[in-house]
Image 1 (cartoon, rainbow, N blue to C red):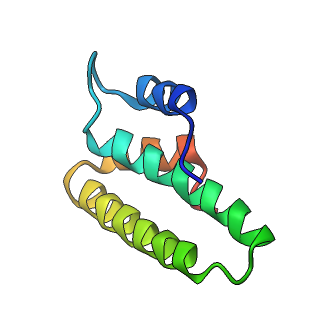
Image 2 (image 1 turned 30 degrees about the vertical axis):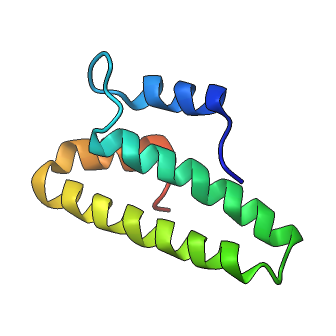
Length: 89
């Protein structure tokens, strides 16, 4: 359910705004998206895992708040992240 260290490093380097960047909003949203996708696949198999479902909902809420912050403060970066992650259809 947690993403592997190698995949996490790939996501961080892909979305980092500068070298050594691990805490920018873009990186946080990308990591949360990876976690959400992983948990979604887990819950397709384990339908009664309500603890993981609660964790998924908390992650979705956190990502929503971060995306709202980006949309209000940096609309261009918001649009770029949404497009790169393929979130809105």
